[in-house]
Length: 284
Image (cartoon, rainbow, N blue to C red; front, side, top):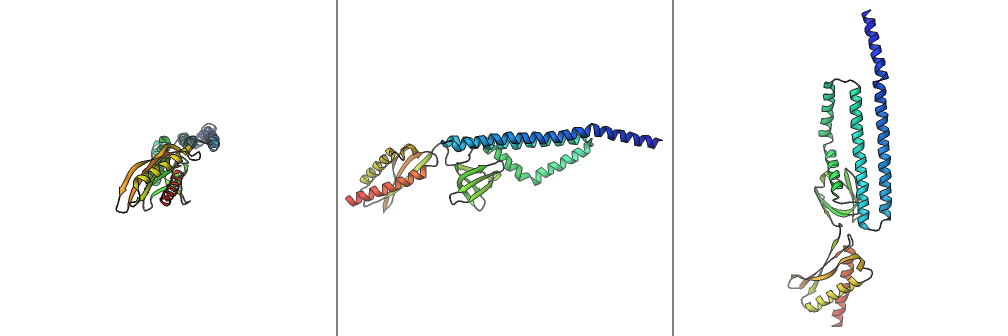
């Protein structure tokens, strides 16, 4: 009789658990899944809208801001998804009526896994959050990062920034993926403006004053050129002598350009200076 009552009581408790806790667990799991899909849908929609505006924008600053916003939405999606999973898992474990010792044991296993197995990944994610939040660089920027072990410093254009990795396209065309956790130092060469620097070696046998006058004239002509004037924020000018040796005098020219346009301006400036100096030499 006692055995029958115990069995009946167990069946009643199990039936009550099926009607209450199991229903709550199923609702929690399904609700979490729907909520995660909703967060992903909203985040993907915002990222798509931001990237569409970024592709049509002509201002580099607007393009960088769009890239930063897209990365921020991606980080928000990942963070909300992680919180939803943690809350849902905790709720399910509590509904299973596991003893506190079992919960402590499970927590210890999870903590050990995060501490050892996912230590590097967690460090990469935290570093990625700082990069995005501080806007150290964004998609389209020209950066130099490193040092990366035996590779050293890597320089290229940023193609993608996620919470875990940053992808750079080098000037040789290679795509380099760098974990954010190892980006100890970075140099952004395309933020706000870029420096135009050109050095010209004038032979000691040439008239230095006349050469400097010719170089200054070329700089003024480049600054008034309709094709290059919009690229300049500060007209190139002769700073003076950088170095004097037995064979030549080195003249330094400096100016400012829009981000990532300094190389184009420098190439044109070198070409014009070389042609002007050669023409002056031939005329003499």
